[in-house]
Length: 235
Image 1 (cartoon, rainbow, N blue to C red):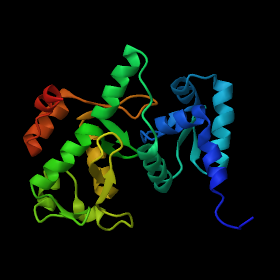
Image 2: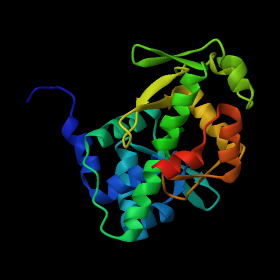
Image 3: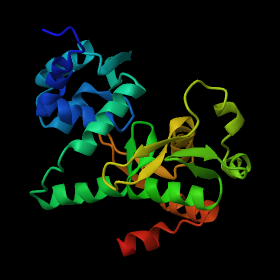
Image 4: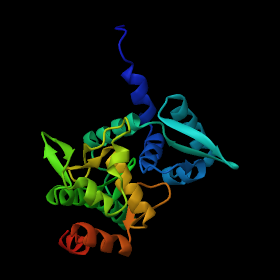
């Protein structure tokens, strides 16, 4: 056998639908308890624990104690990137019930892609940042625009502090549902973190879906001129 990378062992970890469902739930970025992940996958807590052990041993998931609980999260940004790329190749799951159809619409509208905002809202926000000159499009990637530091500073993001980190400041991430790019990198993470802190968006337990709050709709309209109500009506 050719002594190359063992892709088969990696593929085997996500070939099980229960493990795949838990990984998708963890792509929301927030650490989750085993019971929440069991509920997300629709399986028993004991079966979820067995699957999570395999994911931890395989390097896909990390775990840390939190009081009496153990909280699980994606092991690293490269793991999250790999999973997000695989979702671009995977066919969409058919919605068989009204509940599943509603969830699919919400997932496409706004969700977390590990630690940055994705979906229709994420793509629209990225387009607005480009349109206002806070970012520039450069050969399929992004550069900070001259208006960037002041523009992001309006909502409390200090770009100069982010530029000192080893992680790329701006990165274009292909959106799974929209097939357009949204903002990732340390600035994308800082933006979603700020929106969470300001309660512009709210997470759902064991889900990638986020809800844009009325405060968030107003904040994005005042900051970037993004009218989400109009966008949703058009959609």
